[in-house]
Image 1 (cartoon, helix red, strand yellow):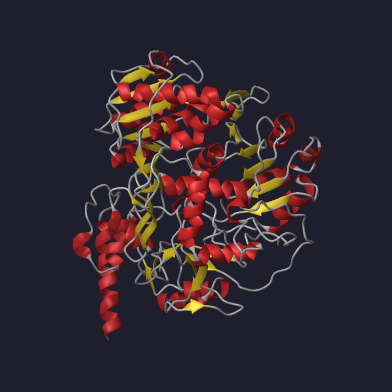
Image 2: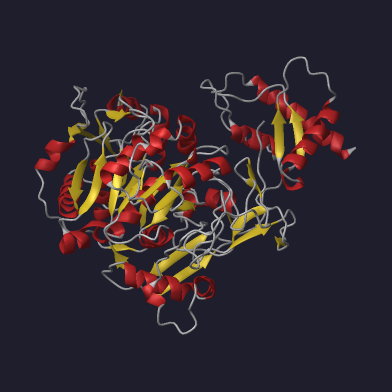
Length: 633
């Protein structure tokens, strides 16, 4: 069944990628766009010990005494709140003249206008100058016990050499650089080198297919690719260079490919290929950073959904960096000297915000986890915690559930006393996994930081911490909006839901610095996707052979099922029982065709020559027209 969604308010709708959980409670998710949300009080655990980090910048404000005071201040005085933090937390070449200029309806977001800064300066160089011997990166390589350490001074040298290398090969401000690397210091340094010279990095998860990589390279018009000979994950080698070779052959824009030697494998080198280490050796360890505007693009990150080709979500220099910095420090109550262990890959937004930019802008030590939670055994995470003395771990519920099934013994085998915060991200955290995480992994003494956010938000939006001292944490709920975030529930008629027990679409009322700026090269799609209502939910259903139930009866039953399991809000407006779906030779459904049929725009179907059976489109058009005529009568 393919659905087109309905967005319920002309405000930023948080409806893609990550689990849809309300600030006040949650029950379920539907088709990534619709959420079933309850504003009711749920059962709670005993109150946990809380050590919140106050924002020193507001200690002298006469009317701010509690967390609630500061939260309300952030909503009522957003420019003052974010402007104060921006001047305190970031280093600027030139101060900004105005904090914000935003219009939700137009999808226009501008923060820290006229300000000039450099992200690499804020993440590396300022720390290297003050505390160069501090460990910036711990590379937890695939084989346990083979970790490597990189200081801020060493990272600075890597970034400068890579920056000079890119400049020597013609890469300049605004150019797009595709990065297809394993989670490693060179991946982080490559991202920061792009930031240093003002190039826009597009990191692609080093596990995507050549076709997926090629699509992202071509959409970004990236002339430069940085990759490795191979990757290592779970004891297996991943042929990265081979994948890149195929992707480049499918592209027409790539001019150079830098190849890092992760394993030293003998890979073929073509006319576009350059050995990264050799090119770096030629360069100076000094490099002047580019002076960049607050609103220059820092990076683009592709997020694919069910609505068409992948979207190149773009984030800005200053706004994104500030939001990653502030959320990392205050959500996790980060204290100087602690070791932060987010196990996400840098190919995802979680890796961008909480492996790279959030920790490094705070001068923290961050872990680069290259392996899998089950390699060489289900004790890998906890052995790493013991060996590296991690203070924070941030992981996905999927891996947590796998480890739960493996049993408590793998956890209790290792010393986890260094842990203070246990984070979770990416999807709903069920009660059983929450309880196991809290009682077994954390021994009942660590806060569970269950977070809700997504690629488009730039950073954590809803989470139990920070909060008032002693505030309880309820199992499997993010619970509280972060500073500056005002979530609202909207019903089908665009009215805000304010009752104590309600279901609706989760939206965020006002902009914040970390909000995405656009979809690269397609701002209209950005506005249409996130800031306009959908005309309705149109479902296509292909029945199994032998079904004899009348279509009208089956349609009514399906609508009632959706209503009972989710809500009337999620019911399809129309159900078409289709003879088939338009699929490409790779098995993917061409959803743009389904959207155009549903919108009654047969003249805008576009090229359907790549379909396995193009005739199915004619059948769908015929059935749609019959339904339209039947509705008229």
